[in-house]
Image (spheres, one colour):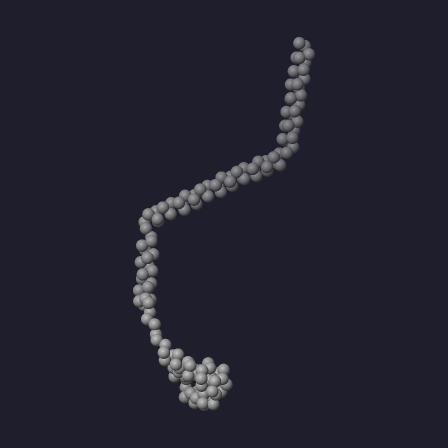
Length: 149
């Protein structure tokens, strides 16, 4: 057995957590290797002098812990919070939907107006020309009136 394997097995040997074949092999190595024997003695003395520490808190069962968590959750839920939160969210959603609808209607009207202008472009252009001609006639009438006076 190599020293590296023996060092890994020292805790298992101390706690008698290895089978008889490995125990014989390990003890054979310890009797032959002074360094491993010294390491085993150090580990053995440390583990014998080690005292288990008391757990600073009381252990609870999982069911008790989960029940306590649910109790805390229920305490934090107050009817007032529920009544305040739901209307705020609902109002926000309604306002958002209303804005989206009005914006959509505005965009649709612009689209329809643009379609109308494109489909009746010639007619609108002719109407503008007629209007300009009417303005010229009015201007000529006005000039003739001013010249007479």
